[in-house]
Figure 1 (tube, helix red, strand yellow):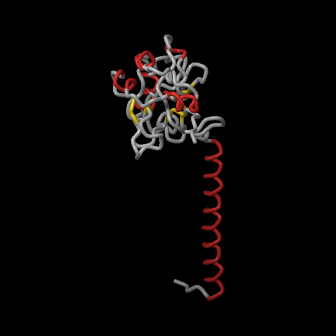
Figure 2 (figure 1 turned 45 degrees about the vertical axis):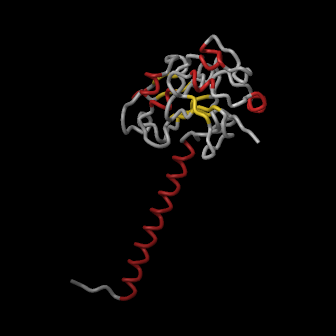
Figure 3 (figure 1 turned 180 degrees about the horizontal axis):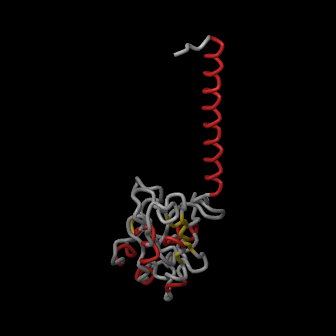
Length: 205
């Protein structure tokens, strides 16, 4: 076997290094391209803030009226309504829904028991506006082709309107009909951060 001369060795080694760098650059460009095509989880006008129970007033007015009486929590048959503790990123004692754990079944009992109307009376389920569900196509198994799911569609109280399914059961959320109940988020098969989440846009100071 012939041995490489010093110059030839350096030339071959340089080409290997340059080829590796070119491959790394190509992968970086491809990664950025994929990220650009993937819709961001946070959309304009929506922030991943607190999800309040049905009928909640705008956050400033809600905080002015809510007396942390626990009646809404006591009336909730599914245990979806929690009262914030010191560890939660929500004012302590106020009610909120952790949709990834338990969604709201829209029984609307809480709107009937609130003594201060921090939760306004609601009689029609489709009138509820707790937030909007947002699908992350990067992690949804039906979008990234690692599975075929459709769990969010199955549990949606307005399926066929708020959520429709496409190829491989890939879900599409329709804002006009989504009430933000969070049943889809609770049903998502992913562990940890779900592929569909409810964003409320609520902020507080």
